[in-house]
Amino acid sequence: MLEVGTKAPDFKLPDQNGEIHSLSEYKGQKVVLYFYPKDNTAGCTKQACSFGELYPQFRENGAVVLGVSKDSVASHKKFEEKYGLPFTLLSDTELTVIKAYDVWKEKKNYGKVSMGVVRTTYLIDEKGVIVKAMDKVKAAENPTDMLNILTE
Image 1 (spheres, rainbow, N blue to C red):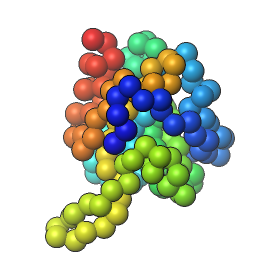
Image 2: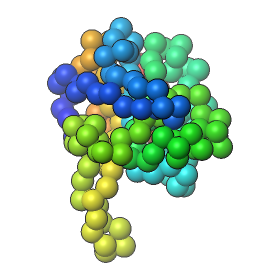
Image 3: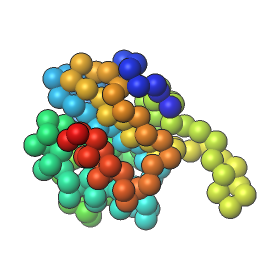
């Protein structure tokens, strides 16, 4: 996980519509950048839907929400449409941003060891500096926790 106080690595990734986004285009706004394992899984769906429900409050507090996983653009599009998600989902099939943000880790599931995305959320300030970093977050609680941090 990247440390609080460090400059957030810039990136260029396609969203669910195939449009390219970079972190630098959000300068002047706070960014909630959350990394999740997979579209349409129970925890990831809870987390995304909760971010979706709270999205107007994130916007009122000057923040955008960006979700990142290694799923394809097409998978993100289906996920967005199925749940009516109002925010941007970024596709990192090459794992470049996932690795740059140090969220690609060894995971143990039912005794089986594999590599995967550890659910992690960063709050990045208007200047592109990480001001909060949370790893191994609880999917259902993470959006509310981040909104509380934002409004403190």
